[in-house]
Image (tube, rainbow, N blue to C red; front, side, top):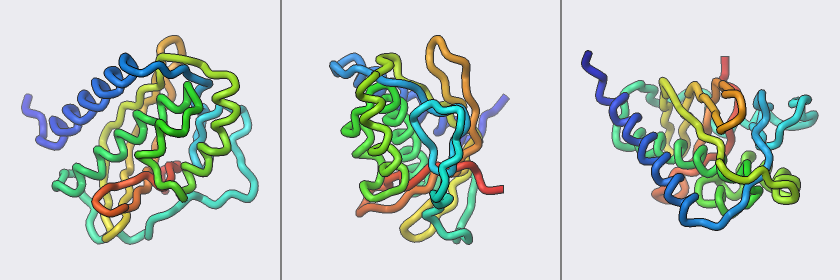
Length: 192
């Protein structure tokens, strides 16, 4: 059975991200924290709660609704966007067990909605860290919509951690261009 080139590329990206995360974990001396919410609110959270509603919050949309191109194949810019989203989720999995903002800062927009959520959660996560292992995110069937300086990765995500049941999400990961880098602005439930 022949695999399409984008699936092979995605598999290589995911394997590389997981290997990089494992290497970072082995070389670091960081401790962890509590897990991610079972159902993501409009701005996805790293703290487990039973009530995911957040009154007064916007829907987290940072990207225009009419993309200039939507593809399931990956051009070079789309590959960079998917890699940025994957690296951000890997960092998020480490942040969720430590509360260390330095882990997510290179991958999330400083003034973005997701980073704002992380700053709110960091004190509680750091006060009672869950510790290793971090959460792993497996992305499947990504679709990348690119505008000039923003993009959305629509993707099905399985989040897992040893000793915990897997959690599944259907997410839109909104990114913005920062110079030559792509940074995650926010993560939200996929638009219907």
